[in-house]
Length: 336
Length: 268
Image 1 (spheres, chains in turn blue, red):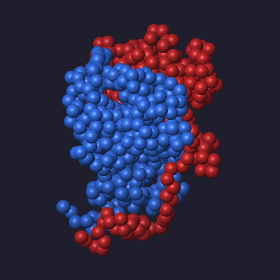
Image 2 (cartoon, rainbow over the protein chains, first blue to last red):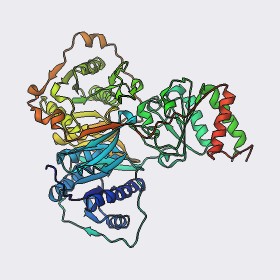
Image 3 (cartoon, rainbow over the protein chains, first blue to last red):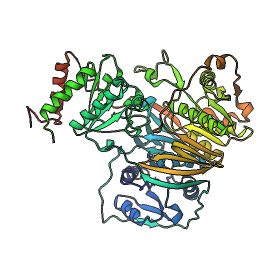
């Protein structure tokens, strides 16, 4: 489509299926508004579903200029093929400049297919978005090589410039009940893909786990050596009223649930304090913890790369350190 | 059941180090492995074959040394291996990578019933290639798959998606991106490794064999480009302490006090 400086808008995919996903949508609206101001254009949120009006109102109150709402009983469940077809037609009709979604499971499923359909570039799990003042291109910052380097990705000759963005990177705008915007209900033609059928969906129960919101996180890695040792990480987290995270080797070994995986293929977290035990500091893992305010690392190898990421590094053997620490903490924290 | 599994050779994350002066990956001492989730996909492929019969074809796009990963796949039990390699493929983003892989898969006869990919790679970490192959081949796709059951000409799969556990029926042919599920990885016997290294042939396809032009692959065909690499917010590298366990624990509890995770002094 070439380099066209006149912008046709910043579009956000309105993911609302849970409060967590809805929050990333609000974060993207806030960032999208900033980008739209730079490009002298508007922020449009796409919302697809069976009952979407309440979200449309919410998005306007949080800063959207326009909401394009597709309302249809068949859109009740997220389905990649159906959503791709619908949004691709909108892209062809309105030619937006930028299209963003949260890097949620669904965003990461939908956007690659959509980008391929409209033949444009896509960057994954961005942590920064800016407009290049010279070219007007979107500079998409995304962790590379496991997060120890950041890559600035540009999509110079294709439109829209598409990106998925990590939850928690941007700040949502406060709810403004007096905000004014337009809600459009375009005519739509929905064709469910019969090849994929959702048979059942249930909330997945995990041991108490709200890593993204936790103030204190204790992470265990391969160095712990066994499931029994890893349980000490759970004890420490409990004493500090925190959460447990795990590196991939620990998940692969079965010491922790998959949902606790931190890093490049897991979650990115931003607690006040993160205590990392028996983790070597592989890039894959540290990619997920840069947002922590204070990182304390315990490892027996003084040359372990994790110490480069830590504010306080303790060189020692956790098999003696952890029980001692737990004992010290139990003395200080009265049992409920 | 004919199964294709896409695998990528990646640097072993445990051995990657960055040269901070030049901001490049230090190649020395970096081992290459099959991307861990692609390995899971391979195991799923072999398991499906055990249950439903058929053949497993491993496909990899990459530089010539990616052959090692295909040898490993053959040793693990794959029936065929195809290496997609051509100097023109260098610099491919996910749009062009999926184009090359989709083209190769479309050439297979019979056309596969199932295409399996790992959910993500540890190096690129985009998770784009699976869904984009599905799009180019007009296949239905399910991502984040952790469990697979055979059901006639379809599969019933479970996937974890943003905190809900979905059960989905997908009609074949179709593409699944598999995630590390609750089912444990059992490591495959690599007894066949020597045989694989010496005897089995790996098919090599480049631009010509795939009927592709240079404009649609590599740097030239890609929509995205990395403009700049830079280090993230300052490296922390704070205080590093060694000593007796008691000393370390004291220091840690003082730090937790300072951060107000613990109340100061003894008791409450």
